[in-house]
Image (cartoon, rainbow, N blue to C red):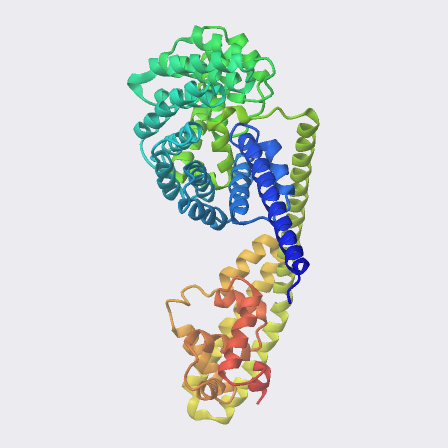
Length: 566
């Protein structure tokens, strides 16, 4: 018989677990929803540590997906790099199958951000387009963000034209105005102004948007954005309009912006140029001397252009003026030809995002700046020490090489004289080969004469000149074009060493090439590795060592010395 308590106790336990689970689910989702409002409304820096500290082991699928979505978006907004898109792909797939359009829209935007960070820009654009087309619009702020990211990508001209970028930014701007989101409204204004600056007939519109961005940035106390747009206005009036008074006016405002901590050399250079063209060279030189050191190729171009104008207009030195403008052109050509900006994108891809979202530039403390300068100085010092050490080693190696060459001369002379004696004795034994013997004797005499000449030069010249003379003589001019030298040498070696080259070719099954036979002939003559290196035209003694190993392998012996002795 089943007792009542045997049934009721398990039911109560199950009910308690269900209630506890429901409470856990509700609390977790409420917490994630609170963090959601932070992530998507400029609170990502506070939200990121909260998400990272969460224990997700007990989360169900819905909680895990929501958590992964928010963590991905917070990491992107905090400029943390991604190595894979697998996590966000799972999140997108989860919400694609759900009925939650808002989270699906956010997941698509997060996926686009990850793809953008990984450099898959075509796929990122496709994802952002998919997000902005979700209807009905589930979340105006997220839709506006998708349009903003599209505008930034198209504006980079890596994906497409500025026309589409302008369209997307102009679609995002009224959405942010309706939402009262002045932060992203400022980004849209600055980006639209940047596009208009590059369109010849839209310069007036660029000025309007730049002024609008400046006013909005001032009201938000975004000092860096104020500076950036003032600088752009100054450059516009200087370069485009040649209105030097206005250029000076905006440049002065830029470099005196309250709270501005960005060292921007070009702002000072443009201000100096404005004074110069206004006929005030002393003021130009004053602001040139106040300018920070150029930090980029573009800074260097503007600096050299300014110096060229100063030399021409102020110091009246046409020669230096030409030199400076040539330097500016050389750097500009290098940027164009080598695509430096594009190649640096991998290193500075976060910088592009910061440029599009100017308010993300943060004031850095003096301590950090000092530490950075100290670190750079330490790196420069280490680099100089390394270069000096390397230069000293190279000098030492060159001196050692020359000493080895000199030492090899005595050994080479002794080997040649020994071969000559053996050949003379062999000629006496076999008179029938007098003609051939005379030819071989002539070859050896020529080699002995060359070594004597080298020994004489070793006393006449310093180490560098002697090394050059040694290489010039031992490389035997015309050897690579004239096979007589090598054929005579091979004949000589076979004659004196019992047909060693013929036997070597037989042992190798006919696999030895002419270069290997020539090296083996030199080796049989008793020449050192240094002499062989120079004669064969190799760049290092290690090459001689490797070639000897290859020959030994073809001869099926462990050591080439053993084969030659046999």
